[in-house]
Each structure stands twice: as C-alpha cells, then as structure tokens.
Image 1 (cartoon, rainbow, N blue to C red):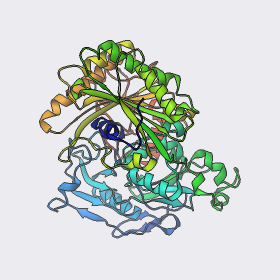
Image 2: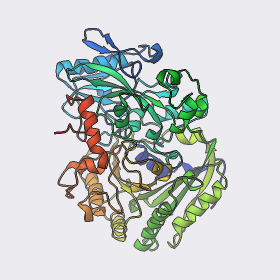
Image 3: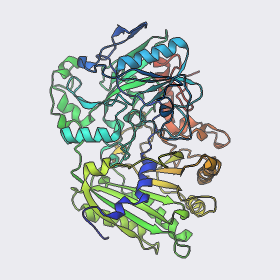
Image 4: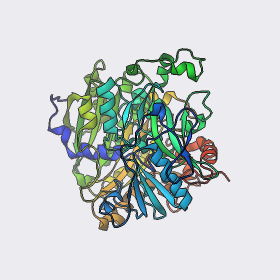
Length: 581
C-alpha cells in the first residue's frame, strides 16, 4: 500500500469527514456536566430564594465565574440556543438557563421542580433524537459553559465537566500529562452525554470503554420530597452511593439526574493510588499518586490509512461487495480478543450509497506499535481478498493531537442545517449471507443518496475483558458496531431520507422483527445512538422491548437505581429508564 508522509490529500476527503461525523455523534441525551458537592454524600446550603439546595465543591473549588444566564423568548439569544446538532428538532422552552456551577444547576433544577416544569438538559447537543427539544420541556438547562478539565488531587483522579468537548478533554489531558481516555473520534461532542452512555472510540479495543475508566460522578438529584441536591458517587466498594456511579457507567444521559462532574481514573491505577487495598477513604485520600499513571498514555503519533473503492456497475457486483464486508467482519471475529498486537488496530468500513461514487475504509493504529504498518497492510489485504476490486488510497503518520482534534472532524450536513437519522446494532460476528445481500440491495437502490449509508466499526478487544454486570454496558461479548445513517440538509427531504434508513434497518433485521434482537449474530443496540423506532411497534415487531435491546439483563438494576435516586421521575425522555411498577 502506498504511504505518504506528511498527511496528503487522501486523508482530507469527504469520505473521512462523513465517517467521523456518523461515528462521532454520541448521544447527548440530557447531557450531564459539572457541579459541586463534597465527599461521598452532599451538604445542603441555602441558595437565593430556594429551599435547601446542595453543596460546596470538592476542595472548595468551582467558583461561580459564569451565569446563570436566563434566556427567554424575545431575547436576541433565544433562537440561537434552541437547537442541538441535529436540526430536525427545535424546542420552544419557556427559558434556557445557561449555568456556570453546580450550585446554579441545583438552583435551576429546584426552580423547575417547584414550578412543576419539565426539565431538559443539554451539554454538547449531539443527540440523535429529540430528548432535549421535546415540546413538553419548559426549562432547558444548558451545561456548555461547564467545560473545565483538570486533575483533582483530592480524588486522585482527572476531573471533566459535562460541557467540555472531547477535543478539549484530549488537548488538556495530553498537554498537561500525556494521557488520554478511550472516547470518541468526534472532537465537537460534549463529554456530558458521551461518557454516561458508555462512549467508545479509536482506543477502545486497546483500553476498553470510556466508562471502564470512570471513577466517580457528581450528580444533581431530586429527593422524594422535591429537594434538589448534589451527590458524589464513586466506584469505591465502601461508597454508600456506589449504585448511582454504576448507573452512570452506560445507563445513558437524562435518567437519574444532572451530571455536573466526572472523575476519571483507570481501574488498574487503583493499586498505585491506594496506599493499602483495605484502607478506608481517609487513608486513600492521603496518597498522592503520579497523575501520569492514572489514565492510559496517549500515543505520540497515529498511522492512519484511508482506502477507497469506486462504485462501478461492472466490478462492484453483489458478490464483490458482500465478500468485502464479510472479510471486514471475519477479521474482527478472529482478532478481537483482549491483548496485543491486534487490539491496537481500529477500523471503520464506511459503506456509502452508490450515488456517492465511492465507499471507503479508515484504519488507525498507534504508530509506535511494533510493525504497525505491516499490521495495517495485512488488515487491508484481508479485507480486499477475493473481491476482484482495486482499492485506492494511502496512509500517513500524524501527531496524536492533530488526528483527534483537527477542525471540522465531526459535524454533519451544512452550516445552515444539519439533519440526520441514525440507528445502530451490536455484532457478535459477521452478518449472515441474507443480511449481506440486503445491505448491498439498499446501497444500490434508486431511493438512496450520496449521504445515505452505513458504517461497520471495530470494537471488542479490551472491552470484552469486563463482565456484563460490572458496568451498565451489558454488550461486552461483541466485536463490531453497525451504524445506519442518513444525513441531509433540507426539511423537504425528511420523509425520503427517514424512509431509506428505516427500511434498510428493518430489512437487515427482518428475521428478528426488524430490530437487532440479542442472539447468535446481533446483541441489541447502543444507547448513545438512541433510536425511538425501537420503542415503536410499527418498526419493532419482535416482541423484545426497547430496554432489552439497549440494556439486556442490566435493566432491572437500572430501574432500582432510578427508583431510589429519581423517585419523582423528574429526569425523563422518550427512551428513559422507567420507574418499576
């Protein structure tokens, strides 16, 4: 395979942009963020004009340097604050409140509860559905200004507020300490919704899900009597709030409260951070570990390849295309156990509709891995074997931070309007022959367009080393994620574009009622790509409820956490955890 260095024009093509956009759009459903509470419980302090509200931040930090800004209809700022990334949905709340501290979040939640107003919470705004723009939402809480990232010595963990974009997280962690987290590849996505839904990205095969590194959360909750307060919950075995931490390791945003702060520390760093495995919280807090050992080291450079194939009626036959897809899938079946060298390789097969003219594959690997280039060449050869197709493309090595944060990597549509629909399914193994033929048929039909298609994304590796019940992410024995998408600009195209992606998805899973029911091939869907069709009997005829598709056997436990921490069901949306009956 031809290599070029420095990065050349192949790596800036629209195919790479679209792939990054579709994968990077992590759902920010009610995106949690950053606020204040001390210790494993919470302290109550008096807020202006409020009942008891919650307390001081860890170590007394978190000064109120911003807000709250209260923006109502008629304010020139109002229209600009109504939309998230998906412009299909526009809310009309009575107020958008932009907050700058945990105390302000507590006050806003308290005000909404007292007034009987439905509340919605947004951090980055990259939600596939209308979770923050539902017409019933009267108070929209905007967490985008809660965007601090740093090291918290009192917790011996890195602190991330929900409004921080992934790009900001990567830059700060790398510049300050040379570390990173295995989160998504779209730098514009807010950490708030991404982390709580079990985010993943280019380093997840090597280091696991991002929630495998979640040490703690600070959450504004509402008690049964209607009092808002901030609570800290950690993974410490002796933490009385540990179940609230667990629920945020993949339970999805907008279910239990407003996350105002995350703390991140790798589980294998606990031994370094703790003086004694049996020590209590006070003894642990006295230890001062080296922060550079508490999260995975960031690669110095990334070797990235972009491979393209041209849609050609004579050569890209059904046999050629389905062979290529099958090859991509079988490689992941064979090379997705935890451990080197293959867990360092991350790939996305972007199957664009034939109207796009080409389809492509992006491959990334830590350039410092022994024989990294050979591993990439071996992988590309495996994918193309037996297809009769001639791939075009090249590879280049670039600095880690450039690859993960370069501008424009992740927004869909145009600057005027971004409209999209995404659907997802986990894969334990390759699609069946019938499913492969269905995919080819939809990619070459007359109703699709250049920005319709699907992605198959490498997963597995270290993700599979964690028990399904250890975190709320139940789908641990999977090796790929499939993402089906349609992206467009004009509202007049809504019906056609929605129809295309819905019909593709239904037909791929026709044998299991139109949805990826857990079984030999599929394993449900990913809550950070929420899809309300899974709760619609017109599109889900399987008899398997939406919550089983997302959470499997972890759902009853999530319901118990919901009942304890949000007994009034203050925090809800179209796919929210339901209170047990």
